[in-house]
Length: 279
Image (tube, rainbow, N blue to C red; front, top):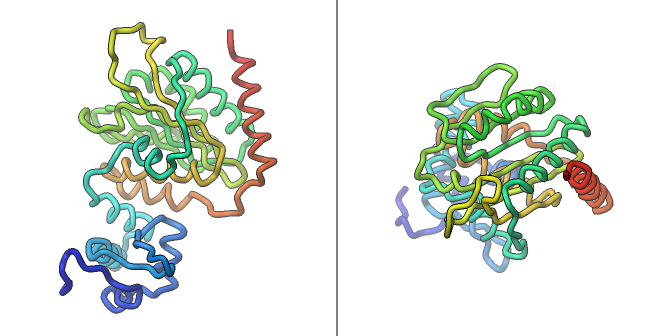
């Protein structure tokens, strides 16, 4: 690039620099959340040089034969550092106020969301964050069943290596120092319903029994929130498996958002399952 690293380009200049048309750039932004321009008060897009370089990287990967979603995932993975999912959501949606819950209640709520999503049989994209591999292994049989009815499925934990077993979730290893390992997440993103929960575990002030560990939880059936959490989880996965992250991003649909009445029915159904499972 001939411009300084602090310069910003108009969309016309980006087209000239990369060969990607305006319509394609807008479609990528709408469909994949990439690229990320700054919006002026007039609504005009301004692209940082670093973002234009990532667009050029996508073009190069496409010329090598990589599918568009995978090429975009690979370019997005170059952003460092990839932040915690919880921090990204709290920054983008400060109106969402987390509540404190204990692990035993978080487990029941997670199962209620999983069961309701599975019962709807709408082939969602499923993403789970388990912190530790041993926690995932305790639920592996259940998640293999969930993956069988999903359009795509991956789980994040401190796995030793990347694995993509057949008819099972892809296992994405997260480094011990990564902030995602303090998070508990479930994303169910389907054409006709969307639900997610995202929890962050603050550092313990004192030792507690495992079931009493406390998390700050955000639960939502708002499609925009669910998609934001899905994007954040796929960004984490793309650091290790950009092609897989791109495949799942391609399977996320952009149909009309469920009506508010449908969202309310979904929230009510999840609540009923939760209450029915309490002992």
